[in-house]
Image 1 (cartoon, rainbow, N blue to C red):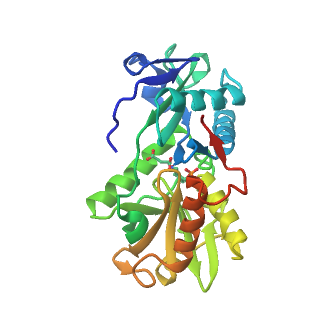
Image 2: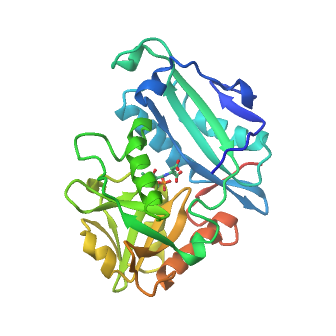
Length: 307
Ligand code: PPE
């Protein structure tokens, strides 16, 4: 998605005009990927924009920073407030929000802890991640030749900037092969996730999703979809999923802040289920988009109103 400038970026404690939110080329993050970040959506409702799962996203941001030994110089409440203020200042009806915490410039070398920790909140207009028709029609994807990082090499559950080189390799390969997205396996060959999405499999009325041990990001949307599925009476299991379970599934879908709930209609040219969005996926979408739009009561307290 091409970024269109907004009026303001929240940068190190205050709203500044878009063009003033700049870093130096010596910033540590540019050289070594030293950042943690989030992706959050604000949805349009009748009462103005509402931010989806703000608390869980800010919690994950702080957990990512903790693992990476990065002290965020603001409290969680201050970051939440910064997100709300930025959405409001840019007068969005709906938007994608990118909180970013990164190491600025002080020294080169691999102990970054002398470099200042800088914080930005950027908001942009963003439609459907995997194409405008993807939510209804589903997408064609392929299993990547790139694996997710092996356990004990990178903390896959955390959202750390440098780790996204792995995702970029998966995404570029998929697009070069004519797919919308790639599915990566973990180092043992079990299903892990998409370059920027978690994945779910529906088989014989049961819903499966890879466990945290399969090098997945601990997705906020994943957690919500598990909750919604249980509300609807489905059994959900987080477990090891072999690659062939994808091809044999009745339905497969991606979840993510950007991807929301996107059906997968083929994998490696093999048609999944009936080859279009399945009934379980549709039922979950109805709940998800009902809650995010305010049409269904927010029974889990997932929305933070902006106005
Ligand atoms: N796995 C990965 C690797 C990932 O990047 C995301 C989010 C997810 C799973 C889903 O997590 P969650 O958003 O908390 O449900 N990917 C972000 C998009 C990446 C991009 O910048 O492009 C997102 O959806 O915001």
